[in-house]
Image 1 (cartoon, helix red, strand yellow):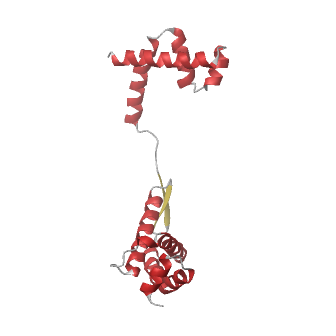
Image 2: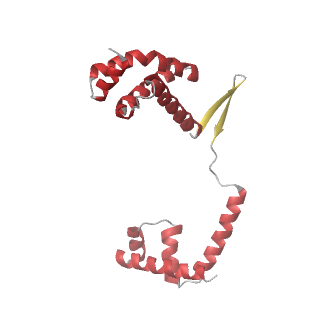
Length: 181
């Protein structure tokens, strides 16, 4: 079977054509990935993903390119995506001279972030103090103690609809106080 015919048949969902293309190009894609990853398991996984993606989207293949080039492009993009995911993962192991170092993504706020947050929080607390006591209480329960509407309803011994209306009113009043500055 020739490549062009196999591609046409594969576009028509012919299983034998898929097998023929897989057998014909497996070594090329696998070899390409083995050079890039230096790891047989990774190369095999990426190659499998490459053929899976290619066969899922075979109808988008443009005949003015060679099939092998198209497969290699898909393979390269899958590898790049995997590298990005690894780079952005929580911990990444880096080896230097047989010593392992762990680079952990630090999402904790910097001292500057803390200072800014504290200043905003202090300002916000001053603004909240300008509200009537029952509005202060409901904002405190919802946003500082992080209680649910149901829990607030039980705490205040009020119907849930009243709690929702009070909270909405408190937020609107607080927004007006903040805007006036």
